[in-house]
Image (cartoon, rainbow, N blue to C red; front, side, top):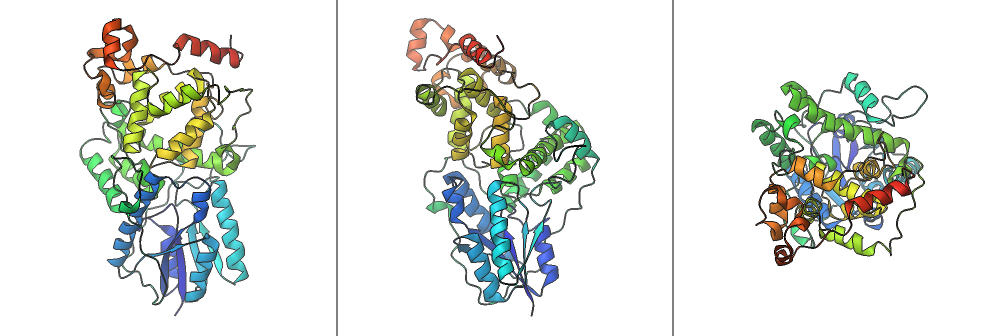
Length: 458
């Protein structure tokens, strides 16, 4: 009786899972394995919201495997030790897993390859599982990756994606493989009150309901509407791999129309960032493009940083977004851009400080997309207009014209009517004092002048 192991990482699903299919084909029995690696905690990526969501994902994956005669084996410890121990215990000849692009993923793969190789076990790493197209599958002449999105989109759109795989009908797991109790969301403290449920079942249901309700069809027109909440909210499921990016793209292209095209474009952005970081892993902590930035001293900017984190900057659209983040563990994409621009350009604070705060709270906190989107907003990344500054008041009038988004998250301003809610500092002093809402931490013109001077744009 031959045995293989499939190591789940950021691909917690049964549908469209090439490593699982390969493992099932290669052996009579397969061990589906997930390792709770303390390296994730040591690296600072084990935030409560993601830990709780992960617990849902693992329970859902285990339930799906049990319906097919299998089960999920969960182990805790260094990944190379636990995978090696499982492979030795069941006599596995191969271990299958999805390729990652982060520096941590590269180190994990190296450790696994070394440990398994010493034991005579083959490691099979599969591309295009976490992304729709493998990083490095398309490259421009003279470079190992695309540094600008639009030419990448053109080339990416010409590629034929693999056909999504169905979930296996049966999974036979060898007897006697020791596992640990599945983690439980209820055991995780410090989570956001509005955290969504995790798992493949929830992710597929979310995509189906959003599509049926016309969300995808209207996406091109409504995805920037802050109050309308018309985005797919699929990012946590894509981050944990409970939903296949390739399958989502196939479904969108089957539906067709401007909305589906706009949705696919966003999934292409995800692939774009993965191929950037695959080529430049250090971009998760170091500026992608060389800048002469001399960010404000963190101690000097401590008050502004605290106000930003707490949603008390005095700019309602910024504060609404940061309060949504704390309550839901999620933030609208337009809001992510404007809050990041405000911190890095209006307050002139290092993008790494904002990126860390997002990773502390975001359920979809993805090193690839979080760090590179922050670099884009800060002008140190792939934005072809690195000196652009998003004016929060202009953004508010455009994407929350009636103030409904602000009223939802900044209750102090709920009684301020119409668009006046976006500039409460213009209200009469007695009314302003009664609101209990702070004055702006910085004048926008002053912040813009400081940024332009620092960037040599005066």
